[in-house]
Image (tube, rainbow, N blue to C red; front, side, top):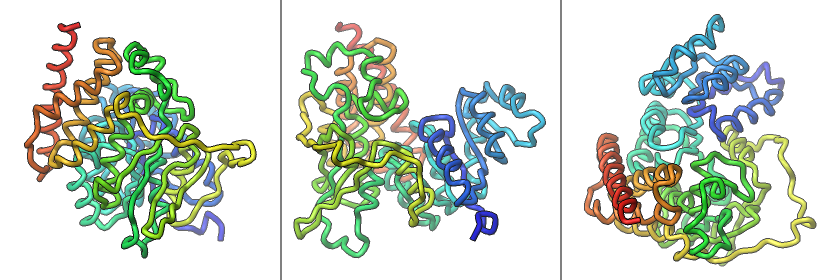
Length: 397
């Protein structure tokens, strides 16, 4: 059967100008001969030239900038193309609710929460690359997916690996899931060395090519901490069933352990396009032009326990899981605020965890999120408290 005779696979990408979005469009281009993808909507933020080029190249119906100040620039860039243009939160919601079969949720931060929830509620399959949907609003989001009737397919390499290793008819035998972490650029640094690292050093990941936020999150292991919370909601496991192991080569993307002692792992070269392709074509595996593993060249795979003293984010994730309620949203918002303060040279690298922990302790007792407004309220309060903590750290320095 030729691709022309296949029903189109309608795709929207929320966050098409970021690393995940660009890789998704690369996968779409690679699979053009085998898959009849139809790009419905693309959204971006400030990179208007790239967003307009993507929309033209892939003949999108709608292009959206989340920043209303860039609306006219995007409209001018797409003049004469016939592509609709929108902006702001309403534009993101318009993109999310367009009739696409699959929505790639790749907007970084809580800005991606409302549109992804809207897409899930209408029944779209969600290829999830946005951590905040599950970290900040896990119960709400999983409920929206279930009620909408779509599928939830993780795109993070670790959660994609677990998704691929889980055997549907063996849930009774599931003992543990093991998230692998590269350890980032500071895996062998002492705590004293880590206290003096710069943003440029933190963004230099040894294995993956990622954006600044994700790279710094990997260096601090806050990304892995958030992935622990995600895993709880994605796979319906207890906190004590979630483990983290440092694996510097980033070849084993994660593992699942069963009651008979078996451990099933998913391996591959560190390339996000593998997980993206699997999410877009699941349950079939696509043919992708990615590097194949050469085990003879690899020679060895190393594993080591994470150091909770140098990487306290993992401990904070366990605290959030044990406390429940809105602690995930609080931790995420405080970390995002602290991350920006680090990027602005207001606080040191290690102080990011101090800010998050202080705010989490201050906001213990906030109940579960019943609505998205509850999440946004907790998020806003945590950001304000984190800003206050940052100011105190600056004054004490």
